[in-house]
Each structure stands twice: as structure tokens, then as C-alpha cells.
Amino acid sequence: MSFIRPLTKEEDETYMKRINDSGANILFVSLGAPKQEQWMAAHKGRSKAVQLGVGAAFSFITGKVKPKTRKKPFIGLLRSLSLLSSLRLI
Image 1: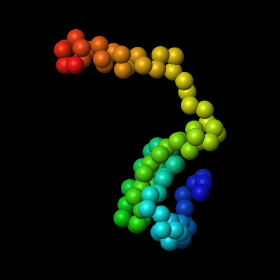
Image 2: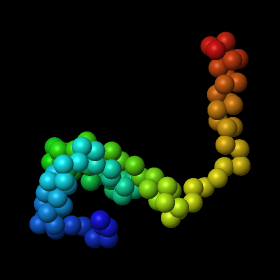
Image 3: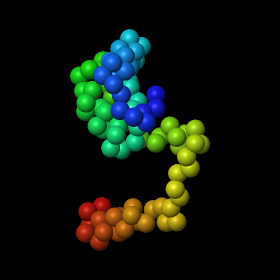
Image 4: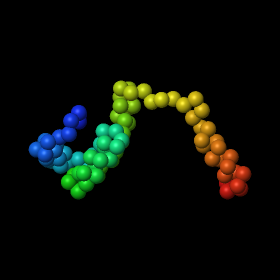
């Protein structure tokens, strides 16, 4: 499904029926923030499946989008560990 424009009420009902009739227990919603959160909130209780917002995960997995690489990927972790060790919490 691609949502370039808002769905009509009839289209929305059709998609929800298809989702519920599929028998899925988990519904992965990959619309990106905040659209997926808004969609999940609007459809809360209408889906038999548990809704899970996954953002761009499928785009990364398929290689459609390359994740941005960090120059210093662990700097935040190292600073946190340093702070905790200086406070003698670990």
C-alpha cells in the first residue's frame, strides 16, 4: 500500500477488512513517523492484529535506502559508561 493521498472512507474500510480477513496476528506499519503513529492511533481497536510501527526498517533491509553511518558510533555509549563509572554506579 502506498499512501500518497488520504484514503477515502470506503478505501480505508476495504483495507481494514483485508487486513482482518488475512488472519495476521502482527501488522507491521511502515509509513514513517509521524504518519504511522497517526494511522495506528486512528485504527486502534479496528485491527485484530497487534500493530507494530517499524518506520524505514523494510527500506533498510531491502537496500532501497542506505542507513546513514556515524563517524563515531559508540561515542554516546562511551560517555554514558564514563559518567556512570565516575559516579561509581557500575
